[in-house]
Length: 278
Length: 360
Ligand SMILES: Nc1ncnc2c1ncn2[C@@H]1O[C@H](COP(=O)(O)OP(=O)(O)OP(=O)(O)O)[C@@H](O)[C@H]1O
Ligand SMILES: [Mg+2]
Image 1 (cartoon, chains in turn purple, brown):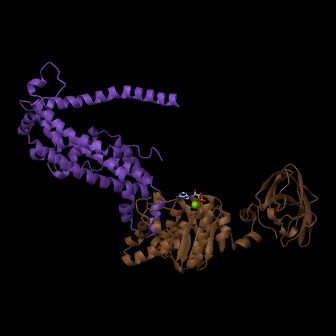
Image 2 (cartoon, protein in one colour):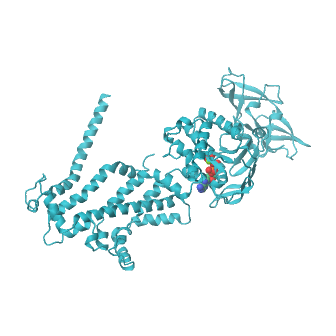
Image 3 (cartoon, each protein chain N blue to C red):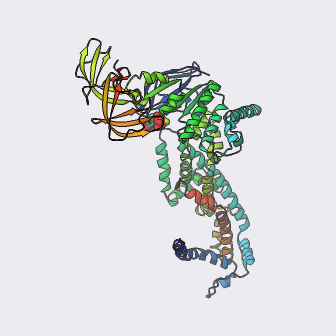
């Protein structure tokens, strides 16, 4: 009895001995980003390495705000990410539902194609997508171009399809026998049961939109529609680069992500491992 | 309440046909049980009646109306599923009222129906719980309650008790029987448990591999099975089947001897022609053996195991390679490894040809 709990303790210690350095390794750049955001520029470039924050964050932020309207960019990023996430969760759940629940000719082909698009790197897609949106549809510098093209997320579709097809079919048969219309079955039974998956997907989509750099950079050139990562990126090209300001912006960009992650990690992990057990 | 009629109903999944032309009539208020081994198409047939599966050919009518293309909800049916299929995120009360609510049924009428069903099934204290907080038996009651609130013309049950333990199964079986007496609604009940079929049914439909083998009242199937499959399926323990041969053939009859013991012979009067030397199968139920000397032939078997149930015993014995089960009401003290002699009354013996068809 006693030796058993001791070996468990040893196991725990060994595990932490491995995981702690890894966690530090991962956290170190984030910490340094935070430290740099609080230093004056000359401090950042001084040869000695300072590991502790100083007090210049507000000044750095003022530099940042002077170079580009970062508050506005953050606001745009948040709105875009929220709208994008809401629309995309809605669309991918509907597509996933159709692919999971309805038998129709060519269903497996559709699924195979969607699965296939996951393997295409974004770099392959982005040029044709840009030509289509900007040149064919003449939608450059519009909100629609910013939000709509990335909406159809094949990973999300497969994610939701998986969640729906794991639900017992008799549940929906029961509702059909009761005369519940299809869209109400979807809305009142399928969606509530898919909530954990939707939460995980929403986090993934929100982060994807939040971190998206290439597409907003390409499709939009108007400063008053810039998302935060793009706004931050423009600072690198200025004649006088304010590194402290950029770091302050990076901290502001990272903070919401960390907050979202910490609060929703339960859902996040539940969604990632959905189907692993049970 | 409604009559149900199936005419040449066929079901195929792609190229694979699973129901081969079913014909069946179910009377108003009748309790009909579909019974058969796993995979024989019971659920498929039931789901076609419910409208959850398309009908590949033939017609199904409910209450005199062909319903082939009618939505499940417009067929006047309610269904109870094997998995209960309760909505997990809703309370019991909401599970009962959800369907009515979604169809715009007036609120006070919904409340009335829910209260009535809760009373019938005695689930009043459970109304605010969720399915996960209920026992298997309670979930089953709620599932039945959800069917009752629809006030259907026909109840469909797909193996509703198979997820319950033995004791609860017997209890719920009695309750379903009571429910039928109370509501007098047409009910179709699917099971692979012949005891459930025998105890519940007004009419049993025996299915095998997508064919209806026989339709009849429980005791008719027991007393007069149409073939070897039905004979073996109805009754517990199962009917004994012993290899035999026709040794003499006369006008309107034949004498048949057991292959394993040719001194055991029975004379049958038959309307079918059968050749001397033909192989046949004799069927006799465990409970139909009698005392030696009192039957038309005596049979001596080697006892292997005796199961004593208290009220009766089942002796598992061998007869040169074949297994025989014999019910022995008074054999409490019989040890293993002995020989046992029993009498066989010829009128209790069934005769089947090699294809399993009944010879009579
Ligand atoms: N959706 C389907 N697609 C293809 N084949 C199916 C489908 N549903 C059922 N089948 C096949 O049809 C046959 C009958 O199935 P069914 O579910 O009706 O059997 P059952 O008598 O209810 O069996 P059980 O007692 O195991 O429930 C089986 O061979 C099954 O494999
Ligand atoms: Mg079944």
